[in-house]
Every structure is written in C-alpha cells, then in structure tokens.
Length: 290
Ligand SMILES: [Zn+2]
Image (cartoon, protein in one colour):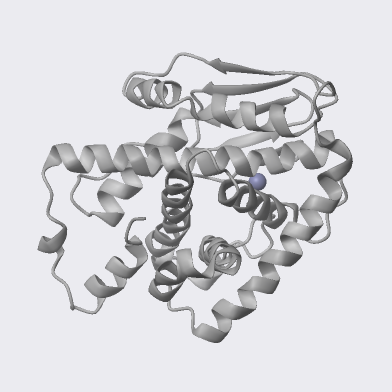
C-alpha cells in the first residue's frame, strides 16, 4: 500500500521535508500522474453507481445522496476482492484527490465556498473517505488515518460510521441482489473519441477497462430493471454524472485530465499550470454531478 500524499504535504508545509525528496524524472511523474487519475476515475465510477442504484432501484436515502454515494463507493472498493492492493491504492489516491483539491482551493474566502451544495466540501469528502476506510479495516488504513491527523479515538469511532453505512446499503440492496439464473438488464460501455490532447486518457481508461470493470461488477451483483449505458466522452467541464432520463453514467475525459494536472501541479508541484478546465460541479438538477 502506498504512502498517503496528505502526509507528504504536511511534512512539506512544516519544512520537515524538502520538495527535492519528491524530485522524480518526468517519465515517472507522468506514470504516477496517470495512475492517480485512473484511480480517481475508478472511484468516480463507483460513486456514480451509487446514484444509479438509488434511482434505478428507487432506494430511499437518509441524508445527502452525495454522501451516501461516496459511502457506497468506499464499501464497494473495500470489498472488491479481485485486487485488494489496487483498490487500496485507488481509495488512498481518491481521498488525496479531494484533500488536494481542497488545499488548492484554500485561497478561497469563506464566502466563496458553497455550503449549500449537494456535495459536502472537498475536505470533508476526503476525511469521510478515510474514516470509512480506517473504520472498516483499522490495521490496513491506520497509517493513512494517522497521516490525516485523525487521533486514535476518532479512528475507533469510525468503525461505527462504517458499520452504519455498510448495514444500511446492504439492507437496501438485498432485495436486488443477482443470483444464478436471476440477473438484470445489461450495461453497455461506450468510449467516444477524445478531443486533441485527451486521447491518452481515453486510451488508458479503455486499456485498464475502468468503465468495463465497474459495469461488470454492477451487472454481476445487482438486478437492474432496464438497460444502462456507461459512456466515456469529452465534455466542456471536468465532471461525471448519472442521468435518469438517459439511463446513463457519463464520465468525462476532461475529469481525467483535471486529476492528472492536479497531481502534476499541486501534489508533486513539478509541472506547468494545467490546461484542463476546472471542475465546476455543475448540475442541471436532472443529473447527479460528480
Ligand atoms: Zn455525486
């Protein structure tokens, strides 16, 4: 399991560790940035699957649906036994993504933050994820939680946060579990062409089968009442969303580029300013944005 970058940031901020410790050659940075972006894409797909299940299966939600979708993403990834190390790295990178997005936005004033947004603040999403992770598997994620400055009592409390969320999701999803001979409608995966400069993200998403693996997991586990499409495409904004009217989850290559640039510019701090657009988190109301 990798060393969480939140700890690295804390060390840099406090002058305990020079940035030279993170000096890496360009090739390694590019590879790590792509890994980081792909891990975030995995998490994002699972998050959107949370929205999909709520809507397609008409599940009740207590509290914010965005928080519930975050919780389901963590639960699914923690229990993805196909490759637990890969899932762990993806979870840590995704939490770090929220953390560093918050750090990047640190210059914003209190008035600039959208407290009424359907999403919790990025920094809350980072800590909520780590809480769920250490709550589920204290030994595996203690180092991560320590790096996030969560004290021992807080980490212990997280076991209740995790078990509450897991119990609620399991209970709601139980009637819709697929069994041998009883499966639901299929999910079609489509990767549309990428705009110039974004082809590498489309190719990597496709070669790692990020959308395909998420689709396979949902199809194997749950009985979906109608056919669904998972669409990788180019968008104006760095986003992903589930649309009930389209029966579709859309994942934007622009978001991959955004996370790639976040890693290069704000985490490693070795690149030029990114060219990707900022994530606006826009939603038209009919769709659930990332
Ligand atoms: Zn969402």
